[in-house]
Image (cartoon, rainbow, N blue to C red; front, side):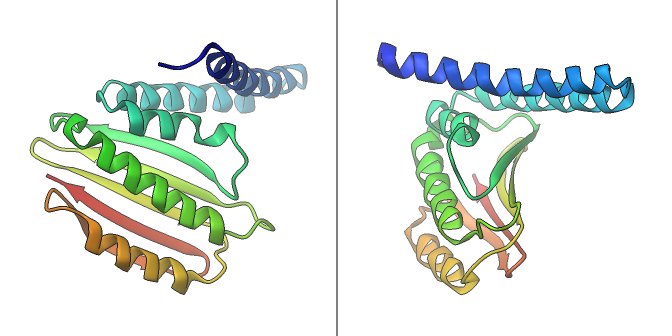
Length: 180
């Protein structure tokens, strides 16, 4: 159970994030830049839909990790896209949350803090399986260390989660896992 202090902290972070977005929209409206304001609103709608799709998967550990990630200081911003439906990820919640936590941590350690970096988390759900893709864009220091980490992590996966593809360069990385 979450403590009252933790709950207040979570609410404060959520409110702060929304107020920042509202201030940007208000600024565009004040400048009569309606197209920019509409773009921000559409982005917020898409973000909310993807967060709802993730939350509806009954994977509380993974959802909490992803939905609160940007509330804390990191070397990259995490974006989310969830597509498809059918396959239930609830049985894999603990494993997926641990895997993602480890992956995000290693990228956080090796992403440059001198550039703007983005990690897109793409979760594609199909009838009998799902794919989880991490798509990093930015600047990585020592990408070979991330490559070594992925190789070690690959060996620790069970038969239901396996590495499908990965490539890691200094300015981009893509890592895809399949769950079935």
